[in-house]
Image (tube, rainbow, N blue to C red):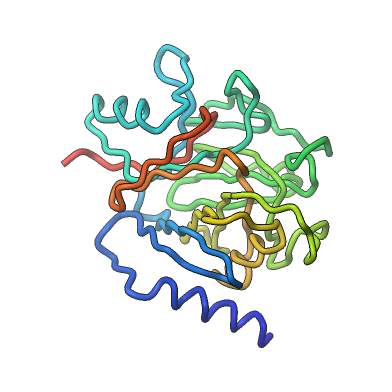
Length: 249
């Protein structure tokens, strides 16, 4: 318990001074010697959405085309992050729902790569809440998701780290993920600013943020858009994009 509390204190020191003015608060933080950017949203207040293609079916691929498309519709892109694994054509690897329309079914079984490292999970955006749900629970409960994206592995499952994570792992990458509170109101997106292991990344959500469930979204292609902070990462073309939007002022 002492170790878990210490991790939390280090993280909160990194978050000191966070305000409440913006719809999404992004802050620098540190946990167990690793640096992260954390972006927190209130699912009861903010508009969380998934985007993949424009009206013609062309994948957005980058933040700038999505930002421009939203601006043409009288909306602002406040926050965005790559939202799950995808194939070369930018189609999602696993389950995907956008605006209530299912584009890809749930993939329940094991497979190669991180996605197939079971248990994996689904980030489900419902009315006034958003939850990370382990895939088997999702199939059993069938929640009413307006948007959903499947990825893997799960980082934290009911307050426990993924059973396959190794404390002494040497596999380090830039990684990004999302964690949610038990009531689905608090949503925290995280991207590492230095290469981290799965074990370290999972401990950030469990020990540093106190979140019972968290999902790995991707590594290497991890990207972040933060309007308030003036950040818009460039890099490889993305598939699904998780975003927070608001009406243009």
